[in-house]
Image (cartoon, rainbow, N blue to C red; front, side, top):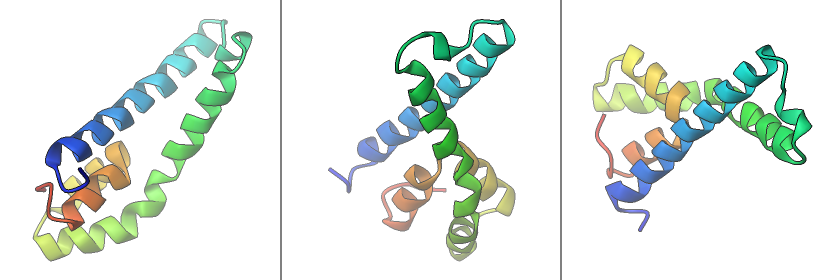
Length: 98
């Protein structure tokens, strides 16, 4: 399964869903009804925020890997910030392309 592109693409879709959840939480807070009003939802939102805050920490690994594969640094940065390890690890394993 981990060798299939579909597996990694599903994880990448989950990453995008997480970003949408984070943005929805920010929009809800701006509208005056934060996710904290629903039990457990605020905790899940905070966990997603913390997970996505770590994506920049993955850039040194991803940039090195991208350079080895001949990818533009801008592409590597964008995909790493959007998808995190679900992109660069699939690339490293040869399942995904740049």
